[in-house]
Image (cartoon, rainbow, N blue to C red):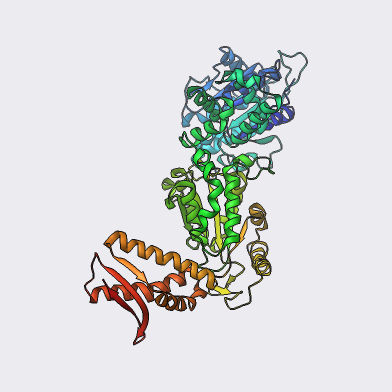
Length: 633
């Protein structure tokens, strides 16, 4: 009796083996396989592919089960009599088809003997006395190029093709009166490693994909191992509800791991004496080699109540957006992001889309969050998406596939996340990215992981992903590729809700109609933060912040005390107000032009190097050049 927990690929094998002659297994074929014995369908063991196929096929009623690869030739490590049985089947099949009996092969082979191996397989498939299975391992390495075969490779696969057409139903000697097809099973990395003509429109061939273990398998594995982990007695003493929560957390956190990973995770937990309740720490250690998860540090939880006030010290005049961003970070810290989804534990910690005019604080907010979370703005990894606007740019970001230029170096994004798994990823001006990159983001936002060009899985589940864009405020001119304003600084944008609605309309138009990727918006959900234009009040706060930094740096670096009088301050702000259409950058530019540059000139003219007090009384223009009116003490 088959277990209800069997992986889908095994259920497909159960179903189709009665009327197909050939199976091509692809995908996770080198992983350990979940095996549920027929006499104990609720018990799970992890075994090799060879072991599983041998035991499962024996349960079906097959007596002769033969394995083959180009290194070992024909073999069966589980049955010493299999070789003799196979030789007999080859002879019987050859006679029934009026074919010459192929010579018996030694225990190794090479490419020149492939034709001989295929001939023996073809003969065995024609035998009508005893059902036989031939499992062809390492099938991805039989030919150099599946789309352009050499003569001996063509001959090998032609022989195999003819063998697939032999429908023989001998009666099993193990299970009385049970008819079974003779079978060929090819085990390969991926389907296109096999010549297309071999399986395409061949009704007797069935390709089957092996995926990572489903949640049911991960749940059964947890049931099997929890008694061997530290704290097993304490776990068993918990209520059924508590145990169910721990099990569910294990299932969610191990999404994307293969069976060997699960086995290694168990070994790691036993080695580090981690109990089932600390599965989060175990998975973090297993994936990243980091024992202490920065997201769960007690200090972070203690500081979380002050995050909004802390961020507002840096980001001025965008209180609504700061509040939204801080709420997203709070959900991330408390592990409450995406609870409405079935696999929330595997998704990124947080997702934000920062929209609005240039220079309004989008990048500044990202830097402030990175510093607050991880202690340094270096934990912000920025990607200028205008650099990924060409076709195949996704290969630069995620890595080129094998055989292509740059394969060895990997992808810029995947390499960065491997190096800093706990980080904020900033994708600046996302609308400039090639559309193929948006498809990749769909997987990252949904699954929290991505397989790079090298075949390595990169996890995004401990990152915060931030997109920035001017969409809605401006649009990209189809001819020039430049941004053209839709909403201007001098427009009446005093009603924030109306302004936000206009911006969101532009964003929606882009993703739905221009990019044709409405699902990207769906993945982001309500995490769209729309930044306002910088007004006079905001400009003044930004200016105050920058002036304080200038005064502080002068004091610390040169022991120069600078005092700016009220008159000079008001003059400076009048200059700043004329640059507000350029956002925060305009404020910085105005301060550089009207304060820093003339200050440098004054210090040079008066030989002020250090240990002085400069009093700025006013700012005048002399021949259209800003000049400071100062006293020195």
